[in-house]
Length: 124
Image 1 (tube, rainbow, N blue to C red):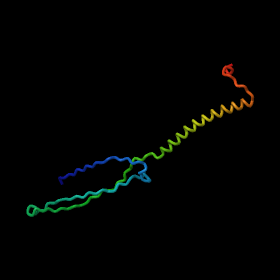
Image 2: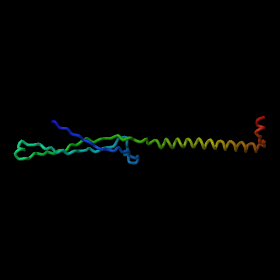
Image 3: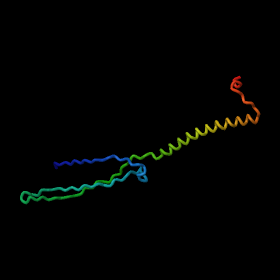
Image 4: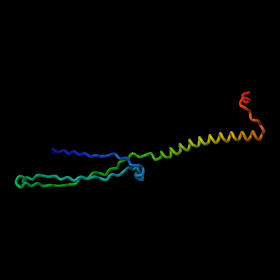
């Protein structure tokens, strides 16, 4: 009746690398139930005479837990690859466009016999 219990546990948070996550991390990670064994000493009425006490021990089990871990965003590599691919496509496409336009214009002018204008002639 006039008793109390104090339980203290040390723990260290652990972030799993993505290789160690289960196949479906959105379901959660199972934690097995824990148990504690208690030994209770009950003094008998004849304790003062015989100096003996009755002892009882019992085990108490907890429920199993389902912990929701912080799930990494598995679509992030796809997003990075698609963004880098888009940037490279724009860069390479613009470069090829400039090179091809310039060379096509030069070839066309050469075949037509058009003389190349100097920058001063272009201003007139």
